[in-house]
Image 1: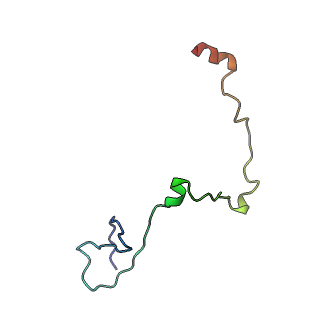
Image 2: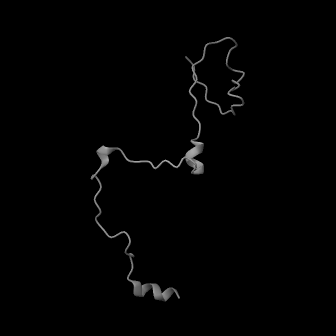
Image 3: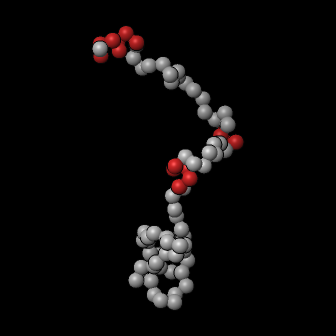
Length: 77
């Protein structure tokens, strides 16, 4: 079995194979396409992590606190 990777645009659910694929040859097709709904934010579905990940992350620092003292930010004015 040979593997050929190519990009094409599906029009009316039809894709055109490259000329190097023989005529009347059975093929196996894997279709990868972008998740257009999540890219545009139209899905409205909030994703949740797998339950096995619950309580597996611990916070070791205050992420909302600045890395520099607040007085040092005055020098930028």
